[in-house]
Length: 104
Image 1 (cartoon, one colour):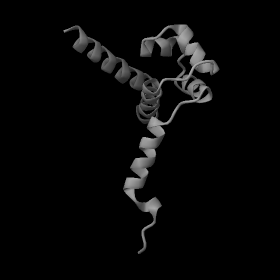
Image 2 (tube, rainbow, N blue to C red):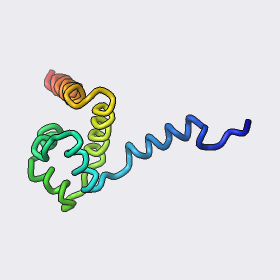
Image 3 (tube, rainbow, N blue to C red):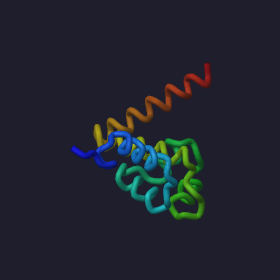
Image 4 (tube, rainbow, N blue to C red):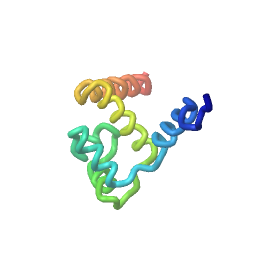
């Protein structure tokens, strides 16, 4: 049997990483907000920025920072795996844990 590049598990993993680290457009940001049913103010609170900043990302006036884009994509993958409420709970628990680590 001849294996093609599409059959290679490394190719699939590389493609997923490329998607995770790709820039996020304003349209993609808005789609994430809709899919997660979280308004720009909610995302702003999740990532620790001003609501105006999240609105600028949604309008395309400012680029979505890569760490925020990665975080939102991870949250979306959790959403698809476990559902909205569980994904947001997982995200918030991780954020709280990180905040506790910085305070100690």
